[in-house]
Length: 335
Image (tube, helix red, strand yellow):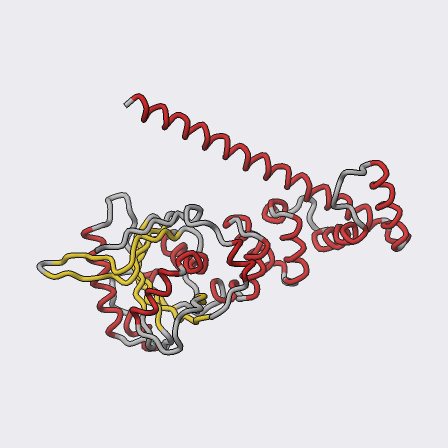
């Protein structure tokens, strides 16, 4: 017993050290970004000197700070651009100040609309995206798939606020899964197996907060056994999420089966502290009107989205994906 208590104490100390290190690094980064903003302002206000000012500044900084990096003429020009982009703000927007410098440069170069840029900045900061993953999410047009997509769900009618809004925000359309080994023609079991095989990629696409519980998750209702395609727990929504996969376009009867699974999970797995279980039906295609009619009188929260399969994800993105532990991954496949 004493040994367990000792280990718990050591574990708590390690957590505190790690949390403090993160805070120190975050504060240092914010200070650096604000320094770049101030230097950019000075360069901008002395633009009448042209490139001569930047070259002289680079030379002087190298003389006085020979071991410091990040003050090349190219980077000083970026600081000027950075200031110009945000000069209407007396204080930098929090998400911008939190992000590393390379992330900010990517956003300025690739996203011209500031509202969309701030959305990506917040997502990158909150989800701890690497610069490679940030580039990937922009390439795959995450903003339009998650914010502007015409989402088919009944969350407003079946969940209370703010849970309904959070559930709606997590849904994408379409989902894009990187499954390079999946055949051109496949059935649901092959799709599911490919997703489990590439679960890190799948969790990245589903979004922050998804924790994998298991696939072909067995539930017993009456004297029969049923198997859920994929079961997740969402750490922010505090609820189970049942994902059903279809290798064909949406059909109305799909919602009936998913509704049955949600009732069973709410009754058999859901804790009294958990929010209502949410269903996510992923189909190869869907007709908006058919989905709306199918969800109209369903009293359980269900979202219907299409999905696309991509066969290639660059190695630098694969290398930068979070580890299974960082994604709160917990595999518990039923025998």
